[in-house]
Length: 106
Image (cartoon, rainbow, N blue to C red; front, side, top):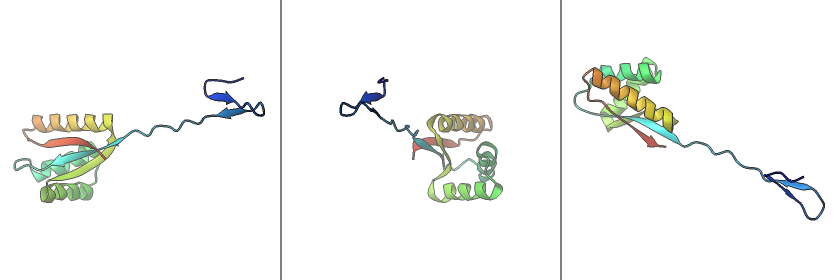
């Protein structure tokens, strides 16, 4: 009996199963962007609070942002990355910081 993903084999009455590979969701990097007003301490605290970084990891990301203009806070599925960007930017705005984050494909 041939189902939706099975085809009868005309040569010997056996069935051939077509295997469908699962689609791996695309991953997105959450990037912090440097500015002249957001404090380094605020960036470190935000990385620790929202991205569960250790003090050392958060400091490393913050220094990367400071020196190169941007740094990766984490890599997530699109929905999670966009949610994190929104949450952190809302928090920064409430704290009077002009912090900018983006989510970009990996």
